[in-house]
Image (cartoon, rainbow, N blue to C red; front, side, top):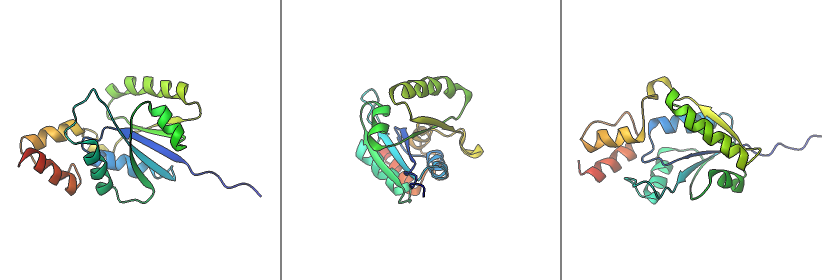
Length: 164
């Protein structure tokens, strides 16, 4: 009799400021090969996010309704966070060729810091390739319609932030 396989845990890190339909797509697709996905909301002191860390975590929880998806914040090295959570997979999205060089370097560094943790690159759905949090913030800031780009709770939060 063989021992049961330990659950495959994937970490999907990012700032998620805010979570978009593109992020949701990658989370959903990561669930096809991971038993559990931890959406890891990064604390980045170099950035001035629109939403607080707590708001971003709450928005992700509202947008992703899957008991196998956990949302946590983290500070420090992603490799250390992955090891601490028992993750063996890091999920990263590649929207364009321009993303590849940076992501490739990060994947190699994470492999160096946490051998046994593999980085998996996912390409977003074709209709979401152009989408980024910064684009969503910009469109919302100027009163544009972001209904097809984000979950309704995120759309409402953007309206409140920008007073629209």
